[in-house]
Length: 382
Image 1 (cartoon, rainbow, N blue to C red):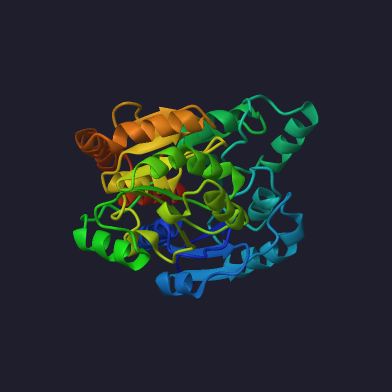
Image 2: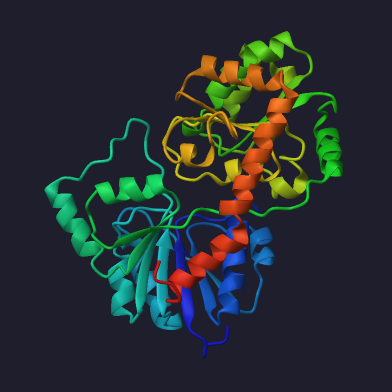
């Protein structure tokens, strides 16, 4: 790393295990930051996949492990202080955990000129945006006093974050972005061949971490009557997680296991052709999602989207135009939406085109990276 250049330290409460939407954004971000004359220090929580290290192996990027970032960040405070003193970053950013951490004060005491919280927070279903109790608000105000601003990935995230009243700093919205590549018909054929999915089948897809919050069981129950009735429909579920064995068992219990493909974790879903091989994307989340990248990736290849009407999803999926919004946890509504789209090729195409235009207008990864760099380097007063 060129120590003569200013540096930005980005502390992220996760560990990259694949090359997905987030990992791609990080790559675009550090490239844009380098173009602005800055170095990057990325601090992850947990083991980092070798593939990601190779993917982002640039001379202006340093990767560090900073484990145990949870709670208030007290468990890793000593190690973070050492990293701050070692690299002396001008700007400090933290993300993928709550705003209430000891990080802002450590960064300020270490001489950082700007301190940001990047808010990707989803909320539990039923969560009502409201102020925390007085004690937590006071603690929050103290912990976040050094913040320069908060960058939220959706208006939903900004509203619910502001409602907590733990800080009064500016809360700006910079939405997520994804790559837009040429649609490659050969990827569709290759992916389907790899997993034994017939070329003539219409494929319904969900890409997610296999946990209860993503509504995979609801997806299975919604698709079951269609998969049993039609031999040319297929359900594709991509991802790993603690609930995966249970979902496989549920598919067997529903009698649809022959029409369901579980791929497990894929190292690079978009490059392998997951979305190219699909016809409909479904996001039946039961929690209030912020700005899920998988939905944007699906829209970038002109897929219509069925999604729960909750959180930030209505900001992405325009009901009746780029997809269909359904009540949370309503498998019958999802089934009806699926049947409507599966039976109308023209509707699938028109919705896919609307979603694609939205991506081109508001969610290009290059533009999102540029906006982040402008804010974090002081080049923008958004």
